[in-house]
Image 1 (cartoon, rainbow, N blue to C red):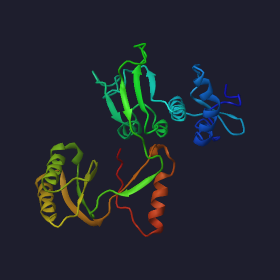
Image 2: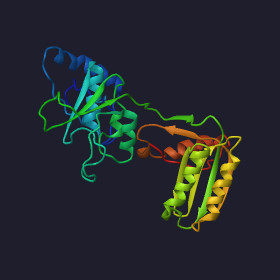
Image 3: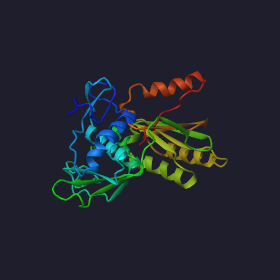
Image 4: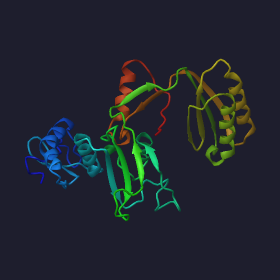
Length: 286
């Protein structure tokens, strides 16, 4: 009962989306839950509930049960966390949408969080922040009736804080091609991407109905690529002209649940603004 003074999950007071205070959680788990386990008793703990240091009951929000399981496993020194679901492990696609998806035998947590941030309903990205590095998660189906049954193993851990790094060691060039209805002609897009692959490396790409932007390393021999992209531009009725912007730097920011973090773009852009750095473009990646 979360009203009990021995309740293991201690959180802040965020309404319906409370965040565990890990130091306090581990203290309570080791003092109150570990002795029960050591006696051979299996405690049943509601995964979505917590309480504040003042004793107010809280809810952890989406992924709360998984979050609780990961925190308990870490504090208790468990070998593995087994998540029992209505799916036969983590699948290559949503069975409600994709015909005959395949079960993944293993997946890295960094790959999984990219799927979670993109809307796939496997494990919520907030919960994955609390997965211990040295404890694997196994996702199995509740139809097997056996915790040792095969499923999907989730390995690794995440960097939980917002991180930024220079994503490519050299400066970057931005190739912009404008036109009308470019997205309706995949052949044009394919031609451009193939030319980049033949001559350089595609670092990123963004596109809308009437334009496509390609980001490539700014190398000494990059000029022929510009001319080849220009040739494709003039040879297709959907494309009108191209422009090149040089001397850019590719900065990649990463973190967990960024798409649900209010004001994250503002935080990043403000740091750049105060240092006199302009943003040329933003790519969303997993």
